Structures are given as C-alpha cells and as structure tokens.
Image (cartoon, rainbow, N blue to C red; front, side, top):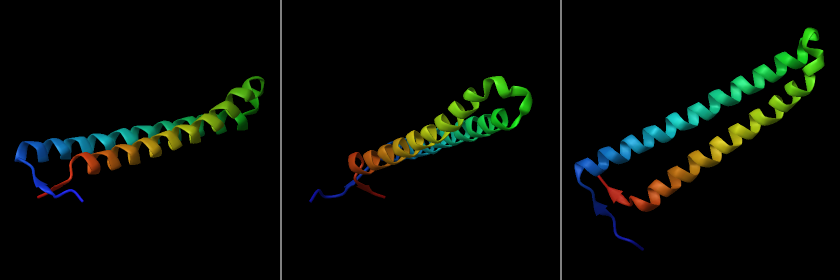
Length: 89
C-alpha cells in the first residue's frame, strides 16, 4: 500500500483547478445531451418537418450517447486524479 504524501500548496491548487475543469467538461457534455435530445424531439413532433424526421431520430439516438461518453470520461478523469495524486491535506 502506498503511503500518502504531502503536496505543496501549488499542486493542491492545480489539482482543484483540474477537478473543476472536469466538472465543467461534464456539464458541457450534459448541455449537449439536452440540446440534441430536445432538438431531435422537436423535429420528430413537428409535422412541418416530416421530411427530415430521420434527422430527429438520429439526434435522439446521439444525445444519450453523448451523455454516456461524458459520464464515462468524468469518472475516468476523477479516478485517474485520485490514483495519481494520492495525497493528504
């Protein structure tokens, strides 16, 4: 088992910035999911856009895929940060 090490204040601040950046990136993926899903549903529901209904279905499928990618990436980076920066404050 690895012993915990004490990090300098600059490294702790850099770690905090990286965590916040990871959260912002996840929120960007989540925003993209919401936009793609709502746009896809709007295209599907509007009768005026019946010629491009296939685009709506594509957006409905791509939206959750984007959310899944964002969730996987968020937890991957979070786990990697914990593993690399094994520290105590």
